[in-house]
Image 1 (cartoon, rainbow, N blue to C red):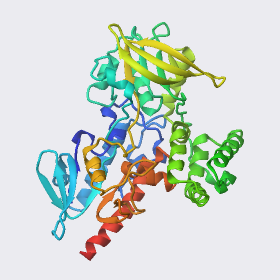
Image 2 (image 1 turned 180 degrees about the horizontal axis):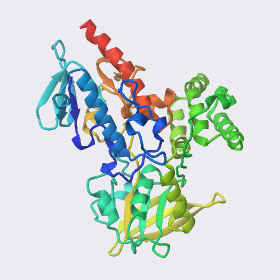
Image 3 (image 1 turned 30 degrees about the vertical axis):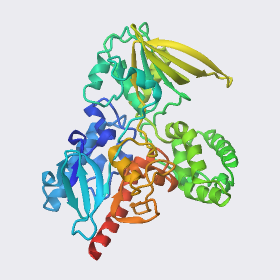
Image 4 (image 1 turned 60 degrees about the horizontal axis):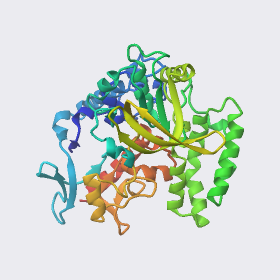
Length: 452
């Protein structure tokens, strides 16, 4: 067995838990609610011991995964260094009748033959909207806050300069924390402006929150909806009713409801609603779902509340239409959503622009070499809700509808299938979900191997 690592610096944590190695960026769950794997020798909370409930630095979780991986290797008398290969796989070929029929074509020009390949490619490409094209490469534009040196670049933005953050999700929270940590950042300095289509931001989880109590949330009536219109109305009505009861946090409600997603989809499809229509509805409300389903650490939440209350942070619900680099600053054209439902066009000039947009999970037009090659050859098919089509146990499905006995998929590339199976974004990429995928996949690979 070998693990091909494209970015060794992100081993064990990926983008999510490495976060550029920044200890300031906190995980969005308290330790007692994190259960990375039943295979790991120690629970995370026990491993952390004295970690604060108000927030665990994400690189700490990366260190935990690395430590547990080393322990597992020791138990199996394996050397982790012997398993890991640094490189980028750009294509895959199947060599019929070969003892090792899967050929991994490496970026370096060589290849490696294996018996079975598990595609755990994670997040590959950031969202890159057209309005970024004119400012790419401009030193006043930071396109990836987790890139090497990006945090230092943000910290060195003068407090007297204006900053626009594009996006209001978890990446934006990390960028805001770094900006707020600059020496001299006060109420009389230019405020941080964060902008997204709807202006939704994550709430903070409560310190000492015991977890979800699904039993207290009744099964929703909208599970039997026969159209998307009826489904949307039912969700809104039942959500309002439950949130009026203070004991039900939005995160708990959505966590309870997502278990019914397969039933909802089955009913909709039985009444003529297509996968594409369901995926489009999910995408339309993606930011609302994500910000209600996942919370941020209390320490981060307190900071955001304080900044908004003091006016040092403004969140605009607006759609950016254009950006242009000027001699002084970057000009931004946008359409603002007003409280009365109308819109208003606006223009602004900012000294710096920071992208806090997430990763693109639409594989239909992906420019990632590996997935583009597999899709072009018909070895993979994009899922309308994101990622590629796979079987329930992770086998890659080709354009003929056949499940590959040689290629399996884990994690982010299964996002669409995970959503349809009952895991709302971004929980479809959470460690428990991925571990369920890995366990099912391991059984499948062992069965295939035994038959060879």
